[in-house]
Length: 630
Image 1: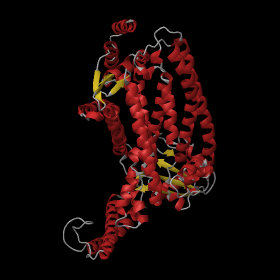
Image 2: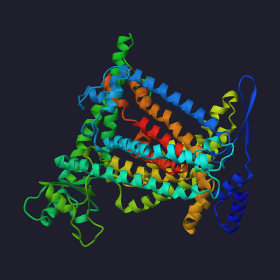
Image 3: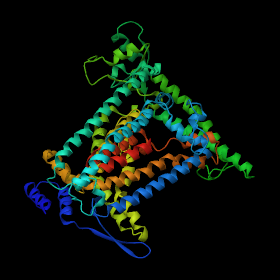
Image 4: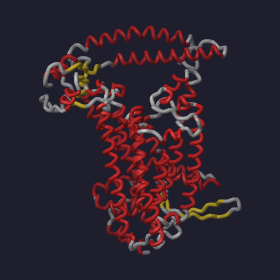
């Protein structure tokens, strides 16, 4: 009753609180949404009381959640175990898809070809070897799992073994019949002396996380310095130049300019201004497509011969259109295109000798030594217009997206404004999409399996939107922004995808369904946000416990590499294993790329840290999750 009175007073004093906070408060005050389900063969009735924000699918803490949580642990734990067994079988059956680095000799060790041979290989891995074989960024993702496991082990043991029992024994049993909250702060009655303990617990968690992060950063810098020293000479000695003025748009003029401004003689080894090769690119792309189609047709013919069939025809399984021999068709196409490509390439090279013309506003300058390149990067005020000659470190040569270099610089600002507008629009459209999916999930009635579906349905809308959101974002960025390198696109995706995850996963209890109202309060009255978060987040700890448990089977499914394996099985029917392997790689970089995965894994860590402070069992679940992912 005291809590209800305080909530009513707070609502009267702060009428401008956003709709989601009022919605949560009314749910807590009314204690409604009692759901009854029949379970058991003997028609035993089990009544589960739960408090749910129906529109978002967010289930608030309530009596009966312990049964749902145990069901989730058993279901997703068993699912993860089954998937691990499937992986153990697949890796021995298709080593080319699961141990290709080892087959090629790119790693210093070879996992045993036994069912569990991958386990000791994973546990005995060395960071230096991983950096050499898969690169620093990918190796540091493995180290991130080690870091999070260490953090949650450090804070999880005292939280679960000390703070949890204190909340249970001395909290006053404010949770009532909500047995899953007995170890949580939700079990502490208002005004308890444990309220004075909780701030020290919070700052203890902050201190542990901060110290571990700084320690990890110090260790990372050692490897970064080593990576910089080992950088390929061509990349280390090269700078990327953007916004080249008209009078310098030729290879010779650009090289001459940097030769003059860099101290010393003969510093510039070469200069290259990007060329407008629109027509040449079209011809080259068509030539590559025809060559690939011819290769596929020949592979299909070899398969047909073995089966006693004839040569493939245009309109058959590998070609489009109708009539004619497929191999002859593409052979003629290639013979027609090859001289056209050569002629267009010669034309572009001749025009490139003149200033301007096919020469665009960006390019690269390579110096004879790294010192000259570093000096050039630090030059400022080298032209009368500070917006000209923007100097940057170049990306990995194989990672360059040349199409971005041909974009019109005068339209770049307009495209970027459009990109930001689309991103903001996606932010406001996010919750309506989640609501629609969740409402559809709530309609489904699985009868006896309804208790299992109850652990899936509330998060289904968020899970689906989270899965497709990276694709939406990367499409916007590729269309509207000049990214120039795939790694830079992943970095931009990581930053924006993280903010979406923070708002619509970590803080969904506070946002509710009214994103506009929450955003308005965030900008107009930011000092009210701590009160809003304090009223809403502690009531959603059970939801996030189920959310983390769900990741067990999700990450185990990723371990099977089911999508590349399916592609490999399909292509291997026509091509050799090596060709099929190359065609099956890589995974979808929108969702499984370094940027998207990094944002997801940081979100998991935030859930464990934020909600684990309120509910100690969350830290234990986070520890299990990150140890399993490692």
